[in-house]
Length: 624
Image (tube, rainbow, N blue to C red):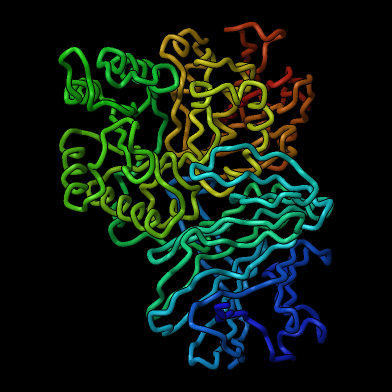
């Protein structure tokens, strides 16, 4: 049997880091979270206000260089991390990165030196493994494991390359074991919640996921690339756990807090402009072959005041003598910025739509993106990746950097979830990684489950970064939806995506009341602040987002029964200073019917009753 070098960080110095003497080993800046580091079992335990929130009973890396005896050289002092930064997209424009940090220095009998860097934030934990001078050694795995005791409610998606599945609630270990995707939401104690994920993927790293053995309580971190060759200094991505109230989790920026700031190539970011997009695929999944249909979506963008339109797959196969330059010229002449689709050509290739193999070779990629810039194209949607491997992570970074050189926005589809790249590469506007509305076109999986799914995503997938769900569909695609009109409109506020692709037919949008069209035409897609006002995963959510001086409130009923949802704005604004535009479900779910009203915000009700699978939207604008 091959012996593996386990770089397990057994913390053998007592005193400063032994929780049994003199209190916790670390505390968050506001002291709400504390961390115990158990030296004998090599484990971490996080407490929130004295109650156990998360246990990590195993730590370490696995190397191919053989067995080794670990020893602790020294333990660094507690340091304070304090930083502010600006986000061009996302849930909050001004972010505050404050944490306590401690570094443990170790060596082994093979002469390798390692560190574990631990940060404790007011809203969570982040840690990563660091290795120096492991001369061409291979990291073949990781020991890190999170314990989810039986009976702990959890919402976790089974892993797929595309991250497209549901987040069913469970309270027991999986009897068969399994492979699980980030983020994983757990509710360990009353009002304490924890969202497990990772952040700051760099070159020479793969992304990871979670694996369980049959009936096990341990969810082990499993890097996608089985072997990582290490030379010189190297570290893993940050392993993250957002911890706090449900509002703390939803509002957290921990994923971007631990991610690298933008490079100099982004010093001029004036070309990075979020906005809503008219999108063809949901209604016409081969529509980009037809220039006349594409023109309808350009005209829709003009009519509604949208800045962008997306030319989706198969634009290289246009019919009736048209070519893509025709629609590009038509769009730019009308003041609508086109975005364009590419096959990544590393995932689904055979039988897949094109264009293909235009971005893989660096010279081809530069030439293609140069052509985009020359023809007025402002961004690329790149689709069909093949998982979380180091190869794919490097390729996606290459695409982001190349696109930035040509001032192109990027939207990744058929790909992994955001892991902080929205800070490091601010031209990353959105990523799919979600069971979104396009599945009404693909298969009948959403019809009966969409409302509950939609009311789960704000607490899971969308917490960690932008999510291209392609929302707000009032008519039907290939398969019907049974959410109400107000529910659909609320998705545009509840779901965060810097490019918000509005997926319905042009005639469906144009048929809506003027107030609805005006709302969508002026919709912000990057926010200055975000607040969770109320909610519970899968049942309901009330989200408040601010842009400038205006607030947008979106609420979803995830249940199949009528639900009265409370509305309390006292924590975010003075109602006397605002006017309110209210969009509610009609008295009956009749197609095309709304209850739209305008009022002084002081006259808003303290609760609104939503139809089954319903919702509401409120736009608050200053009255003076």
